[in-house]
Structures are given as C-alpha cells and as structure tokens.
Length: 193
Image 1 (cartoon, rainbow, N blue to C red):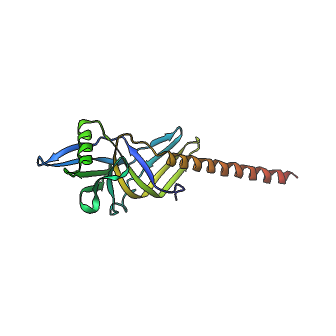
Image 2 (image 1 turned 30 degrees about the vertical axis):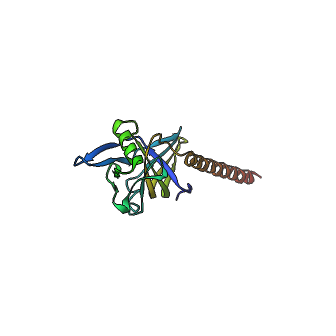
C-alpha cells in the first residue's frame, strides 16, 4: 500500500497533437500517461506506472484542464467532450475543443503551433509496490490510481509535495533499517554477557 497521501500530479514528456475533424471540430489528443517508463525523481529514486493503473478509474468523472487549473475546463468524460482509454503504451486521451470558449481555442492554437506540447494527470495513489534495492536505490511502481483530471501543460513537472512525500518514505525506511541493525547488535551484545 502507498504511504503517499493526497492528490498527486505526474507529468509526461509526450507529444500532443491537434487536428480538425471534418474541417470543423478541433481536437487535442495524445498520451497523458505512459506505462513502464521509469521516471527518475532524484538520483537513485524511480517511479513508474504499471499498465493496470487506470483499469478501475476511467469511469470516474474526469476533466481535461489547462495547467491543472479547475477554472479552465477543456472537456469532461461525462459530457462526452473528453475521451480516455488505456492501451499497451499508456493513457491516451482526446479533448473536443469548444469553438465558443476562447481559452480552449487559445490552448488549441498553442498546441497546434508547438508552443505547448506537454501534459500531466492528477490522481490519488490507491495501490503501489515499493522496491528498496540492494544498491540503495528505490523504485515505486504505481499499480492503481483514482484519476481526477488530465491537463495540457506549459511547464509540466513532478509536484514538489509528491517528491517530498517520496523522500520522507525513504527516510522512514532508512530509520527502520538502522533501528533493526541497532536491535540486532544489542541482541548480540547480550549474548556475550
């Protein structure tokens, strides 16, 4: 189970695309998450999404946002303006742009020009595996999430609070290991006396 609590965001270096359907409907589409790709949070600490991470969450009421801003909604799966599906590569999404929404048209044009081409997603971790390796590195594999939103982003980055929570988990693990070694040493010393 995860020790990371609260809403998380993760970013993907992927390429968003725009296209006009039948010369009229504008869409932004691409992968908002990629599976089995380890992201280095800091030296020796990695995180990756497993292919089953979104299996139970795509029926949620999910929004497509600009830069995680809940006031800038581009689409919503419940209204049919946001389509999401998981395939072998990752979480693919398509947002149908409202031509009467100037914010949506502006971000569409920025993606079309290549000025904005990154994305991110917001979620809670429900299940993950932690692998503390012999070489001192650690890898988290996120197995199950509760997805809230996907975002078209100008500057996507791992949220600092998520990284801090991961670092805290490492510190707790190291403290437990040290306490265990101290206990073992005390037990050995008792045997000598």
